Length: 407
Image (cartoon, rainbow, N blue to C red; front, side, top):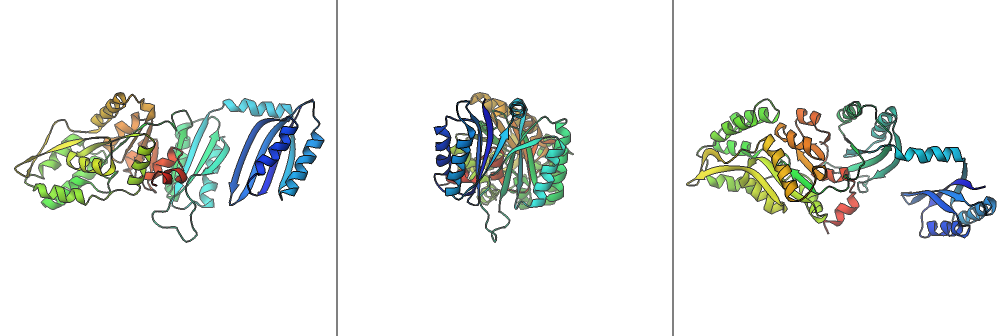
């Protein structure tokens, strides 16, 4: 009769441990039904679910494993598994899988307790927990420190909307970000990322900066805020704001472009994406003049924005061509995806304003970044506490690999 045994081994990590143990198992012609290993602070935890063939006896095998682990300074525990329990475990593999990603400047036990409680309340089982962020020195926490833990969970959620609502409540309470997404074939197979520009790739609204130079800053800023919050039609408000810039000298545009404040993590994110073969694009309701500047600086593939009309070195107060509003952004995302032969499921859209919602809604992964409340509430995913490179965590890319892209 075949036996199924769970072997748990723990102790100080050192090279050759797994090889030494599996060498003994091989001698008894054991089948490996499951295996998992983790190392935390140089401490090993190794689990093997093994099937011992009927031709072999378990006692000599377990004794050999016990002696070997003792020689290596490890502890070992053997747990027999009955066939009914094993069968139930096998049947569970067809259940849906999801990824819950916790992002913060520093993750605390309270954060983990709250998130895992919500996971358990929704009848989800945690299969694996991984730290994606780098190691944080005890005295190294500052305003750009990053911490990320990823949970692989299994089970069916009765109400995805309710689950997301509970996670969003935690996000607000603790000032952290929590993403919840299906663990499907597309998650690690994205190929296109499109970005809003103002208040996304850059930490400014360019039209507000230009308005200040033109002496109409307060008036334009109020219109911008109402438009981004969805209170005003984007196209009408945009044309009204541009009209107030009439007479602005072109040299102001050049100076503004040189001083654009790049958003935290933007350069790391784009360089990593490029290294991984992603296509990137700027889809902006702002101005092409600044989009082209960022395209060259960040090496972005496409840029679509509004063309600010300049005559004799002066802004006329008009834009030429079709205004890039929310609807147009969604159309451009689809156009680029078709051109690059990329499905929308493989696309990512990132933005902060109400005019970004159409593209966020059709992308495979729509991310509200440091977004207005109406956008954060409507988007499936949001990041508010970290920089743009926090998006890499949602793709399952750890700091170890994103750092390699900078070398």
